[in-house]
Image (tube, rainbow over all chains, first blue to last red; front, side, top):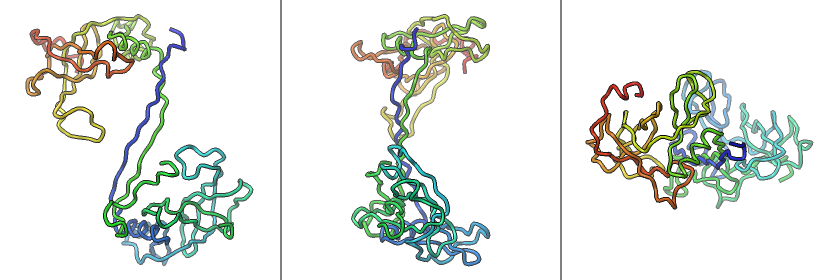
Length: 151
Length: 176
């Protein structure tokens, strides 16, 4: 049997996980729908974004939820020259970790930029939200980050 | 998730109420390559035949074949056509509905040892009340109409009892 006789077929797995988000992530998602970003205050006054239900160091319940951003600083990034079909943006983009103003941890998201030369660690960026009618309470309610002043 | 399909984040309740549920659609796009042995097997299936392969060392017949013998680590090159009948070695009654289920519950999913094979084969058992299915039950494959035969296992609709006496336990005890 020749190699050309080998059968090939698409094999697509599609399934949906549905989970309850709890009071803290629920508040975070609800705020995103309102165009706000929330962090959770933990031990030593550190603010975690996205907020965790429990302080990662002490295990205590997280404290008050506070508004952070929408501006922040890129702490590290990776350029994606050829986005895959399911990725957040359909054009070349950067994965970025953004430490939002008022936060002590960095949030993973994507950044729209003309090219890798337009992205750098330490640069100021800001969240670009989708229009209110398109926001549903999901991390993708933030469409992407853009260089501050570029939006 | 595509760029345009951000998925519902709220739980379908009040659109402006607190978000309590999150849906995360998973989409994984594979291109499956069957390989030589399995391609040959699937072509047999598209002709309404079970084709296996025999190990040249231990002489066991594998169906579906994977192209090598897991015991001896050698290529299985001898092709063997098996018959349409076999024995239920073990089975389970499926009573639990799950997403994507295409068969009405309850139904029987069984391991069928085709006559002449040394590897049991998964199939449905029908045309018998659920409570009467048993280990050792003799069955035969029921295929879709010839015009619907395709190189995939939907060509085998199910197995049904042949009416023969049950196979003795000793004849299939090594295949459980």
